[in-house]
Length: 125
Image (cartoon, rainbow, N blue to C red; front, side, top):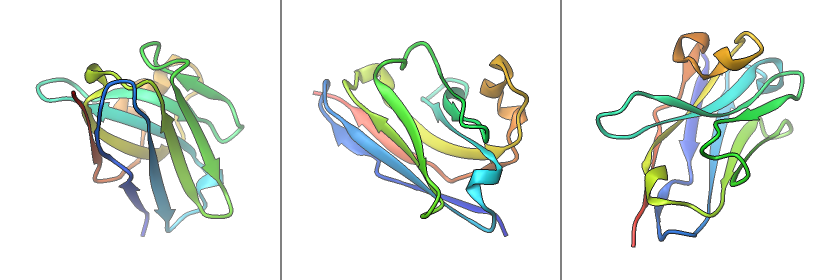
């Protein structure tokens, strides 16, 4: 069956960096669009970055220029490189797989079929 397993979360000071990984199994990740979402306490889950199966990427405005989404097809693994982290980036981060519509709707959770269990990122001094 389809499985997504995130790793790489942790605690970091403001201005620091982390790289999240999402190992996919049960399907070939390059045949699906992949994305990262995050959810902070008492907030809705929000889209962070998407890598469509045609190679197109897009980012939430609040992370654009600081985060980079990428994929290693040989390892069936999705990554999120996060630089210049801010306290407001603190959240549980989830990866997702699916075939969303192209355009801004990628950030809607309803567009995605499969989800990982999440990895916690805490940015604090």
